[in-house]
Length: 137
Image (tube, rainbow, N blue to C red):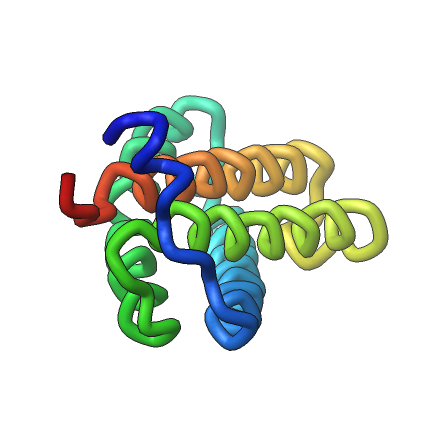
């Protein structure tokens, strides 16, 4: 993808932006609940982090295709749509870590690991959004 092609991508409509935001919030909440469950099962320990981070990559792929379908994303729009969804998720994560850390778990370590995992997932989602976009060259 050339520099000119990147900036020639079709703009997202207000509806697509709204759906991207909603999908980002839903994904964040689902991830937070999953991380809470993993923490309660003692699976969020430092020794398991490499595996968790590795599993986030294939675990995020279905979300990429789901947002593409639900928001009617066209070629060239997937990266920006995922960036918007991820921004919404990251904002929710920041607010929860500040005002509702018990959502993630009972210990500071689990809360920190959970917050870091969500940030990792955000980066993965944005990268996948651009990598999996099927823009015609």
